[in-house]
Length: 348
Ligand code: SF4
Image 1 (cartoon, rainbow, N blue to C red):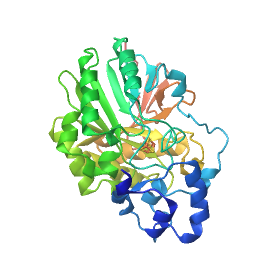
Image 2 (image 1 turned 120 degrees about the vertical axis):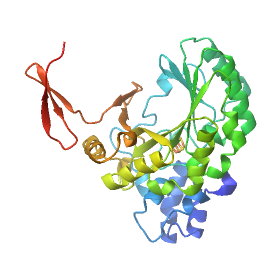
Image 3 (image 1 turned 135 degrees about the vertical axis):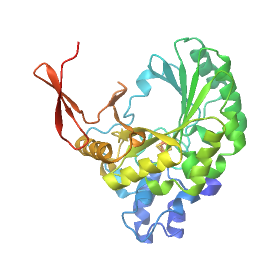
């Protein structure tokens, strides 16, 4: 991916994305965390806007060097549930399979920022992949395999096809989910051959694409997603709620509508994880709940993602959106989309 990405502070300055006087701060951050901005994303940045929402996601910031209380290297607790290299088995019926530790871009809020990037880990070797698939094969309760990373779609078409076929051949795995930022940040990689490689007989494949601002859903990104959809692979979205990127109802609503218009069903809105050096990008949960209320009040049900929090320590995801049902006097008060309460009788 490097040929299509800006990976060094000097390149960001040369491209006019960062003033030269920020070089020392950028060097310090780049020495700590991986940096890459694809040309497709760099083109979307307005260098004249100090708060550009695309730049905030990818351009290093000196604030990343300040870890705050509660932040942790493994915020969602992958390590506690990793029985063999490359596998995270947190929930009974599904596992994560991490094929790669590299990505097309490096997001400044990344929850795996201590594990992804050049020099931070290693790609799954052939022997480690054998062991990982052996683990899944020995666990017939695994119904779904989620390819994640790093970004699984940086792998070659040949490797993806081989892995997908081996997963399908296990027999008991019925669903394959592929989590990726590539269709948005490097849409030219999504060829018909790549889309086809994710399908195998007996396996229902879903792609979950990651984007956080409506500007990211360019014509090329929408076309890349359409290549999956038109080949029979449903596409869902995941976004991270980020301060200064999508933490206002208008932007978040426009993002969800843009997904739906591209036939992508909004799936998750993640509360930003407690990754080191990311406090400047996190909102409060109360702010997230208020935004979810605003979406409920103004947008089609198709545009509603689930607002979720990964519980620190590896205890899994829980929905943390606002509640609309309040128990009262043996019955309920139900809140409508305008915030008005209505009585509902107790039911048997
Ligand atoms: S693409 Fe995903 S794994 Fe890679 S840096 Fe961004 S959030 Fe992290």
